[in-house]
Each structure stands twice: as C-alpha cells, then as structure tokens.
Length: 220
Image (tube, rainbow, N blue to C red; front, side, top):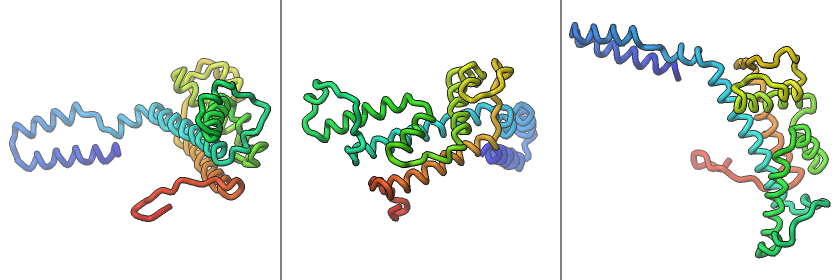
C-alpha cells in the first residue's frame, strides 16, 4: 500500500511535468525534495506497525474464545453444571430459565476471561474435550499474549512479569521487545489454525450451531 502511494505521487509529478511550465517544474522539484516516501516511513516505523498487528490479532483471538464459550454455555446449558453459586436476587431478576442460563454464562465467561492461557487450555480440554492448539505451542501463545501486554501497557519494554511468564533471560529487563514479520506470522498462524480446528470440533463434538455468512450470494 505504501509503495502504491509513492507510485501515485510519482505519476502525479509526471502528469504535471507534461505541462512544461517552468514554474510548475520548480514546484515539483521542491516538493519532491521535501517529500518522504511512504515506503521509508513504513520501514522507519516497522516496530509500531508490527505491534499494532500483534495486539489486534491477540485481542481478536481472546475475544473469539470468549464468544465460543458463550455459545457453548447458552446452546448447551448442561456444560454450566458446577459447584459455583449464583445470587438469588440475580435469579429473581430473570424472566425465565433461558435468562438465568444467559446471565450465568456471561458471568462464567467474564471470570474465565481473567484466566491465563494455560488455565483456558486446561478448561477447554477437561470440560469440553477440545484442544485449543498443540500443547507444545503454549509457550508461543504465552509469548504473543505477554508481548501484547507490554506493548499496550509498557511501550513494549520488557518487565519482570514478561520475564516471569515467558521464562526469558533476566538480562532483557528494561529492554525493548523487538518484533519481526517472521515472528508475527508465526503467532498469527497459530491463532488461525486454532480457530479453524475449534470451529470444526465445536460443531462435530458438541453440536454447536455456527453463524452462516453470505459471501457473494453464497452461504459459507
């Protein structure tokens, strides 16, 4: 996209240059000398763009897990059975049993949203017999999530929590976590594959109904 912007600006210069107006030619040269190429801007801000992409992918993935949990709990209320309690006033505020299920499902999802990825992994595996991803990938997902955390809350500067959660070298404390496109692609691939498998397994094992999307007139 950045390259395309540069190409369009160069094309504009050429079109104006066809007028053969000395004044315009001088203006073009002056503007060209001041102008920063978008490709160079992107390169100089590579870390920012990579962090932005990582944060969005991590948050989308965690939101997907929360949404999937809500669908499972509301479509299969029996999965909510546990020793957890719900206040009687909350039950009385509900009009029917469906409302009770929805409120309890929301409460359960909210509580689980504060869990670590390891706890979520174990919960899905034990409660629903679903694997989020291969167990050996847990360290990679932890790294992605903790990198998201320091990007949002600490300008991507490695802190003690990051070192503790990821098992990184303590000498990295206070240094910036540099990202590269290879690492970002690795994280994104894990998330995409996880969503693909979970969607299939949730339908086949639990009978969860999916939401059909219409693309170009066809149902997907």
